[in-house]
Image (cartoon, rainbow over all chains, first blue to last red; front, side, top):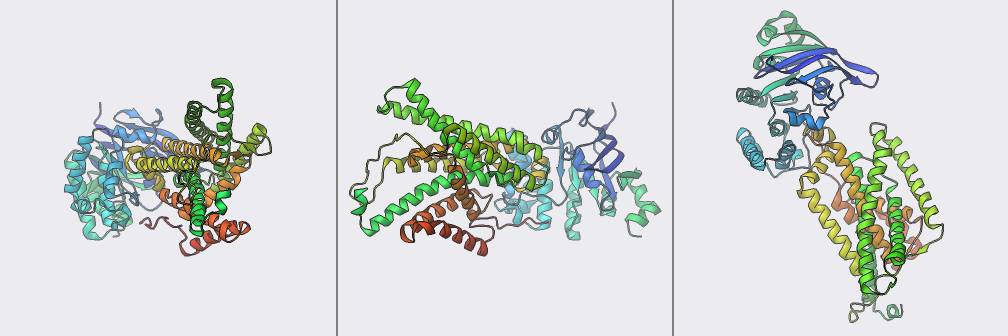
Length: 240
Length: 316
């Protein structure tokens, strides 16, 4: 029994006649933060959508806690129940549901009412602004607040693995720092994280390991600090 | 009818207003089916009006069977109440089942096709339903049994309110309240709203979107079924083309109120019912449709999202 929580092997996926992912393989161990960096259109979001079952894998294996989600054709709505939740790119907040209702939606697959209540309280402690705004429509929040809500909402499923797609996108630097602090804290509390980012420096600073994705293929992988110091990565992704 | 001539002007106005509200609440029930389905999968289900027509045919068929096989005497109160109960139970269930089946067999395989493909197939379904209706009851209007007495319940006011009016209000209002409570407070209702706002995010929450869509078609169909029974009892005649005109009014009501918006569909239905009837009475019957659609165009010019349409934009 390996310590891998998620083990992706030779994953292929795409839209219509176009294949976006080519034999992509990656691994997330229990307790890890793994960053996936890459340019626009490299296939980062497709990878995460594939893991969540929203985009169908065409070939390959997605083993989550040893169970192959591709071979078992596990539908998107059951994947959340297994412990794999996502905070998607662009937040995708339910704009006309209240903040509280958004959080409740995150716990849709759960039936332990008291546990859900306790987790909503935890979310409010983590992001106090959400408590203040709990009865407002999600669409009225600022970008940073929506990002906090998206993360809190994904956590409501009590995931073992949290997929984060571009949590820093469009946010003020101060808010970005705050969001990444939360990611570190969550990880300390036992949540494994697969983090997709264009902000490669921030991502590699919090991550244990990293993957570089280029046009649907993994081109580099190593410990995060090694990648941070690799001259090729520095040139291509860190703007040096 | 004689009473009408004796009415004062205010009483006459009240009478037209009542008729408008009654018809309006029927449009509203049908409009809910359009607006809910549109809200979830952005499909204008053109077959919805014809589903309503088939519902009223089924109710008519049920009453024929009831009189032939269950009770011989149509005049006993027990027989009538029993029949009403059966019609109001069986027809909505059948319409719900037919609506879900249509989605399953025809719209669902087209879910990722261009929107226009699905809309054209909905028009096709509309014609199929209409032809089924034509084969079933023929081309001429058929009398619907007059089960509810026309007794004037308010003889002193000058406005004639009958048991039929009471029945329409007594059925449509609770149906709408139940729907509102369901959508607002139940977990499935919230899942419906969430799916309408962002289907991808709904999937990421673990919501079974296919199931939510099926439930939406079921509820829309059931409401059309309720409307079809109430319509038959009120108008006392049904025919295979009734789905087209009533469906068009209901669809207009949905757009007027803000397509995808549940209270909007109710408001839109009432506005169209009242404007139509008052227009017939005070402007002339031939102008009533022009008036309705004139108001629709005016509202959409100044409020393109309809009277109660969404005002919150998605933030990106």
